[in-house]
Length: 436
Image (cartoon, rainbow, N blue to C red; front, side, top):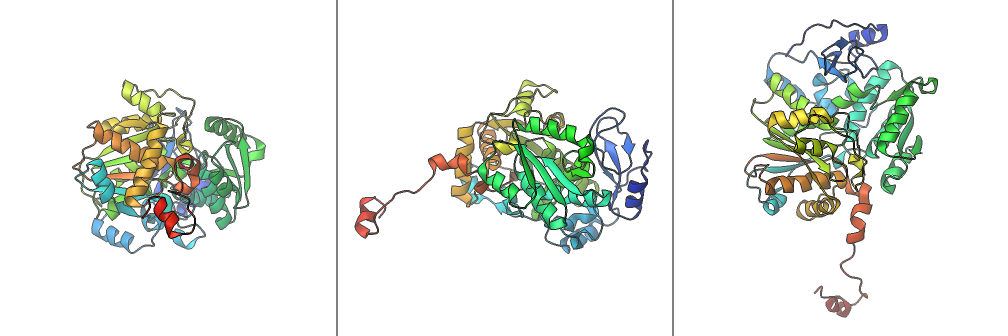
């Protein structure tokens, strides 16, 4: 699949040099999702013409798909096996990084029986990444861009997982880090974000307040030399989520899933997974066939779900109030694009309440031995609800994402989870407890 040559209204000698040197691999431009205007590769994220979001455009590999498959399969067991499809240099696997990705795709037969699924049910378990969430993927791509653009500090606004991923990646790659979070996050995520030695700043307010603060900081002289992975590096950062699509298809034997259930925070992950699936089809790595994408939200922060159910194209912001804090973005930037994808593919956007989230976390743990964080409880809970409502076909191949480790969100399950009994160290006491 080839794209047309760039006709950019901006020029940047630094980005031109970077592109010429192969720093961005097959990437050739930044393209506006709204108006299609193109810009040189650089640390920008909004279109100068219509203020729409920018994303990476490529000249993707042409030729024999079988040869490309063999090349990928011979690559490292990380996202860098897909370097020919990403905005990174060919030697990226040799550069300092956490080497995230190629996490397990678990065939969830026990869960399938519980849910009445007769087709294949898989859990894409991204808790196996270096900092135990999918955020390691997106940060890894952003770090390569930051290195090329000469940034010295890595930063982000975060609901927790991203802060930890940025702190760890910065430590490994030799950057300073300064990350910003809502002040009331889960203790596990706060500790994990702080332990890497960078600066961790709590902001009084919601994630949306944190994000607004970071937008101000990026335009201030104090932010000079800072790479905000989800702001001025966002076009590159977002491409990391595509690797979930690549891995799922490769692990399914180079075939598309029929249905996929994805959590929604900003919505970027869902839109980029769809982009990745379309790219695989376009270059012939998978057979083209219909697939459905379902979005999953917590009821206490469900602006996209509410818009989908109401048939609206505009997503109205909400004030988050949910235990699923990693998904607690009340004004999701990619919300309208999520609506488009769900409708285009014949999917849906659904939500579950806090009690259903906890039940789903326990269900997945009990059936498959996977301890998901609250976002995983959301996707499993929504999958159950979609099946019960007749929106998800239980006879088809379905993939459900778990994007993080339950050890980060212990508060969600701790009140209702603990020892079956406390006994004296005697057999009589064991029998008296009814455990024999």
